[in-house]
Structures are given as C-alpha cells and as structure tokens.
Length: 156
Image (tube, rainbow, N blue to C red; front, side):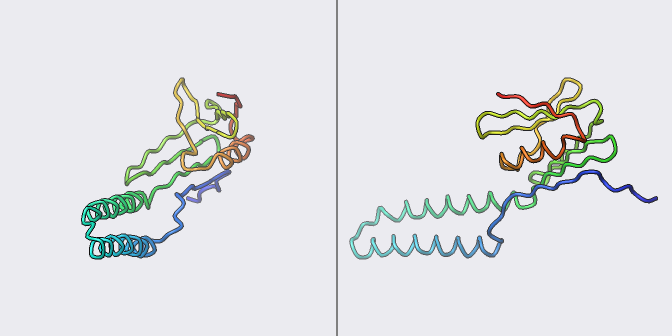
C-alpha cells in the first residue's frame, strides 16, 4: 500500500550548537580553569575558602550540561495529511501524540508585542504547539498552516 504524500510537515529540534564531545571539552576547559585559578589563589594567598565555591561552580556547570544531554533527543513534529492534523511532542523519552480533524479544529495565534503563542483548539480543549520554536517561527508556522487549518488571530 502506497502512502499519499503529506500536505505539510515540519519537525522542530532543539538548538544544539555543541555536540556531546564539544560539551565535554567545554566542561573540562571551564572546570579546569576554575579549579586551577582557585588552587592558585589557595596556594599563593592561603585563601582556602575559595575552593568550596569553585567546587560548587563546577557542580552547577556539570548539572547544566547533564540537563542539556537529557534533552538531546527532544523534537516536535506537526503534519497535515488530508483532513488530519497530527502533533507529536517527544520530550525526555516520552512521546505525546495528538491528532485532530482539520474541519473541527482551529489554530489559535495569540500575539502580544513580539510574543507569539500557538494552540490548537478542538472540542473545547486547547493544546499548545510550536513549543520548541522561536516567536518569529511560530508566526511563520501559523501563516504556513493558514490554508490547511482554520487560523484565528488574537491578542492576549
């Protein structure tokens, strides 16, 4: 059975400017610099109270990089195929999928200044979409979906 091509499809990934190796090297470089400076201050001036704060700084940096690694596989996918609008949100190894009939749903595009929020409303329930996108990209997504789904613009 041959699948029909999708009318619209977009996959949004988190911005990762550093690879895993780049993150490890950055952690080693920043942590090594912090540790060497604090050890130098301790040895030269005898200011040993600096060491626990340096260790705390390295720990917080390590936890931040761990949090980034935890979200490496996150994505959001929005597709329109025929009369079906499908939304997939994959965060921390948990997949949430929803689908709506395009005749029964409305894409709400709310703006306040530069802020743009998108949500799909159907049967009295609202679900946010475009969570991993910048505000400008959410506005472009609303324009791209305009002919495929009813779009309602408003301010909040």
